Image (cartoon, rainbow, N blue to C red; front, side, top):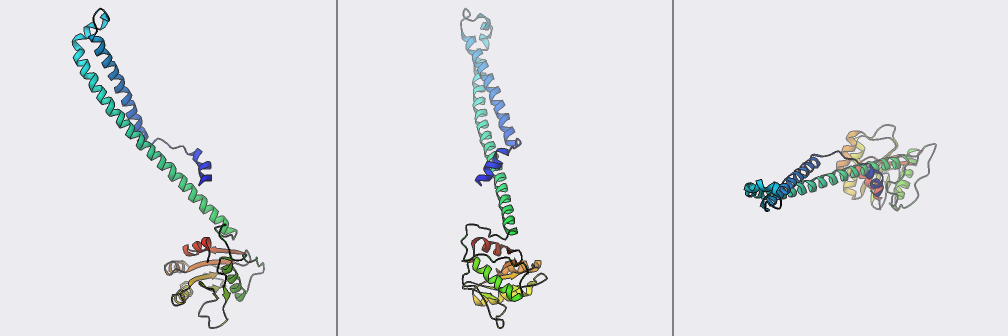
Length: 262
């Protein structure tokens, strides 16, 4: 936010709002009424002076009471206009500060999204300060087998903080390919997007197992699968062995990418 304020703040040039124009109008009214009050008061005082002092204003002597009343009324109007101007200026400043704050926050969130996309594209953790359990897997230029994909996912899980993550046996795993102390994962080395059925299976296993469900695939997810995963609390990831890349594909997965599995 400090960087955004330094870069964007000086460039913000807002147009006049209705509150700004109202404050200016009350300011002009205050100045005009105050000027008239001063003139009327001065004339009332001059009209009361002896003719020998200021003979030119002697003819106003009969108007002196009216000038005094008019001056008093204008003073009251000036005071009222002054209070109205102060309220309008305070409202205008509040509106201006809120608009600037909204623009800075929008710029800040935009910078966050841009940084997140860049880190995801480079296969980096979203939070650079988050302590990781191990190094991320090395890129595998020739790809991996389905079993190799499970080993790869286990290494990613250890990198994210699930230190005990390991691959299960080939059979009798109940749809779970990688297990750890706090999380279980299913891995699909597919050539097409993952549908709802495998995710529903993993969610069912996790409901009785008690550990958090993670789903990894090398391709992507059908829209219905993402919606179901969001409701069931399943974190969805896409990995690339060739590019050494791990992406969070729903809110739960992105949160774990930021805070880790520890």
